[in-house]
Length: 251
Ligand code: ADP
Image (tube, rainbow, N blue to C red; front, side, top):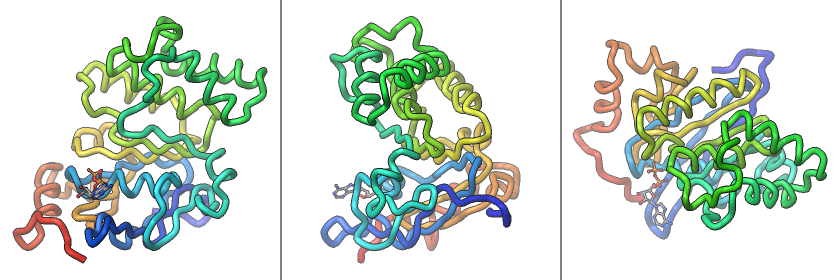
């Protein structure tokens, strides 16, 4: 997936996570070059969130290394986090804050100087279409709007890399369309990893697909390579029913 002159922006090197004796991910490795939008696909429980949390430095792997823009997310945590925006599964949690307060809070925590913070809030407000709701409590917003607030927060420091965990889960079709539009509007400079178990997401946004099942990588390639026979349902079924089993792996 990489050509000679592109820079690797997201790298998983043998990421393994045990929860007690349970193997949540085993030896997950991939590298994503600059500017790609990659769908991280797999059924519920496949290990997508666990992998993303290791990639963003929120969860220490049992083995392996994660790098963002060539920086080890544990050894170079601060530098790596400057280049990374993360939209976790349930979006922003501060229900009593308004989007404006949330963005100011995160901007200050990230050390953006007041002038740059003002400019960046104006930019993400525009990009994520938050003009109307900037001063309403987050807890009172629809799920679609909350996702947009989460995206604005993830993009506040203008990171090169964006990692989003199931960003369209629970959205209605119009909200999903709006969200995809926002992603497309980010332009071709950003490197984006989006987890999903929704097959249509792959066709709608992805240049490349990483497929996990039972904590292991079972496919990587283009959407066209994934659906050799024209459908996405068939390979999804085949990749998740290897040897007739869908069960979790024991160590
Ligand atoms: P996905 O995001 O693909 O739905 P997850 O990464 O959330 O999958 O989960 C992978 C597996 O690890 C699942 O079987 C899940 O139950 C298990 N798991 C996730 N977090 C924990 C935890 N904190 N303790 C024990 N098991 C966990």
